[in-house]
Amino acid sequence: MIELMGTMEYGPAPESADQAHAWLDSHGRAFGHFIKGGWKISQRAKSFKTRNPATGQVLATISQGDRGDVDAAVKAARKAQKGWAGLGGHGRARHLYALARQVQKHARLLAVLETLDNGKPIRESRDIDVPLVARHFYHHAGWAQLMESEFPDHVPLGVIGQIVPWNFPMLMLGWKIAPALAAGNTVVLKPAEYTSLTALLFAELCDEAGLPPGVINIVTGDGRTGEMIVNHKDINKIAFTGSTDVGRLIRQQTAGSGKKLTLELGGKSPFIVFPDADLDSAVEGVVDAIWFNQGQVCCAGSRLLVQEGIQKIFITKLKARMEKLRIGDPMDKCIDMGAIIDPAHHKQIDKLVKTGVREGATLWQPDCALPKKGCFYRPSLLENVTPSSTVAQQ
Image (cartoon, rainbow, N blue to C red):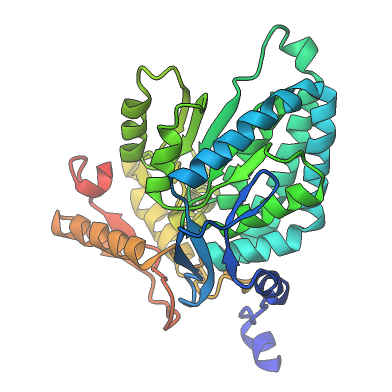
């Protein structure tokens, strides 16, 4: 402690994972699908492991959803939809308020489980993601109460198939599920195969909150399971968040089917700094834009455009700030950057950075130690990037 007071460096402040591991153990660290208000494990089911990207530790075994599982989930959602819509806006709002309170009640467990499964810093899951999930359910509970006055003559679509990515597993779930339920629809949701655990915990909370069976159904699996949901004939709408390439395929597969479709895809967002900007504040903005959640954000500010007259001083300030970023165990409350989601994604990032250098860019990274285990990558700045460069476009 005396040494820390002398250097003013951050000491370790680990968050306990005991509660999350106890919950995993209570399920035998093996999960089926949540269909019609209960756990379903098919005898024919295949499975896969989900790991902590910061350590490589296996957290649980997840079921690979097949056509029979998707059919069962859609059938349950279809059966429940009429009764759910029949509750009216105020009846549905009561359930949404109950779900919001469940999220708040179990916020610490959800945050820790999210960090273990995803690798994002516990500060982000604890202070941003999980509180926003609760707020979304509260918000849409309010809209459910206003349905008759604000959306007269509107009717639910029916059964909604939802596919969410791994970068904000719990928050994406809230964004997708809350408005669908408020409007009187029922849901079949597939979480990302890398990060299914908080969706499965949320399913359990739905049961505890007394949500009618079949209103929410969670089917786990990889892209093959998602494709079965997309192409299912008894689903009225697909809501997808993920890569642009997969979004294009879904648009092609749903064309002419009569399904409604919403897509939230990736981008190459610019961060623009003009000479009259508060440069110190702009530097903080860059840090949040590109290294928040390890840069794994659909709208990450991955292109930095700086006016010529301030380029030198701005880049100097940015590099000084990058040297202060703390990278390491995401369960440590002092960490700024946690782990990349998976070794395959880590490899892809490294490949793109090296491609940028090969195409003429200059790479700068802070000289910081990385944990010996896990998927960690230094914050990286590529200068002198041409508009035609791969890293300027992908």
